[in-house]
Amino acid sequence: MVIMSHDHGVPSAAGTLSGAYRSRLLWTIGISLAITVIQVVGSLLSGSLALLADAAHSLTDAVGVGLALGAVTLAQRAPTPARTFGFYRVEIFSAVLNALLLLGIFVWVLYSAIRRFGEPVEVKGGLMFAIALLGLAANAVGLHLLRDAKDKSLNLRGAYLEVLGDALGSVAVIVGGLVILLTGRQAADPIASIVIGLLIVPRAYGLLRDATHILLEATPQDTDIAEVRRHLLAEPGVVAVHDLHAWTVTSGMPVLTAHVVVAEAVLRSEDHGHLLGRLQSCLGDHFDIAHSTLQLEPETHVEASHAMHD
Image (cartoon, rainbow, N blue to C red; front, side):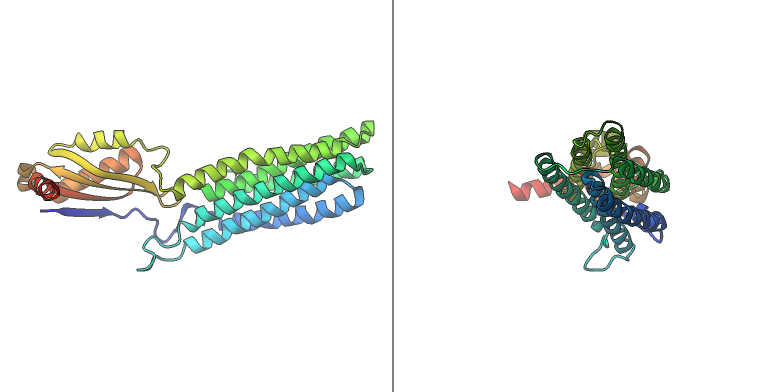
């Protein structure tokens, strides 16, 4: 006798965790695009490479958040026979594209800044400072909109980090503008550009690392498989656990499958549904795994299976 049970913890009408923040993502896109236009105009008027680099970063913010929004929208689509988990994984692909865009911006900024050292351009520090200050204020609004969303989803975390990085970039431009305004040292502009580029790298790396972890279907980082096995084996009547696998479909959606070998006497003496319920409650209560598929197997089934493969 082999008994299987599925605990379907996949988000229903509400969709993924990111879905509740679609309106905030739209506002963030609008803010980022407005900042981009202001910074491009400011760069042309002031001659600042740092402002142009920050404008490119702001545009990447808008594109990145747009990817996040598109992924969130797709993720709300209902599962189909061809895609039984729906489009939830699209959010993770969006995070990867976001990280690659950030790395591309870093390469461009670094190259442009090095050229600026060899071909210095006179920069209007006062205008550079004023535009950067305006950009910082706008980024502060974006951070406020996403402040409670960053821990809900990898996709939303990417959007938040985009805006945070742009805010830090604005700070670098402000400092560069002040240095030029007070000392006349034009090298402050390409230096500020390099600082903006360096701010991008760790964020892009962290986002790419976490997204790749999910795409490779690795064990969720906060799930200890050995501890999961120990908890399942602690249930009275459970003899062994094998083929235990855990992975993440999308942010906030860990899943687990396992074959649970149960003593014959236990399977005969009680309703197997009660045992399955206790095992799945254990997974949900202790490990926050709401979607699990457990196959209960009597000891004789396992012995027969081993004999077939000997």
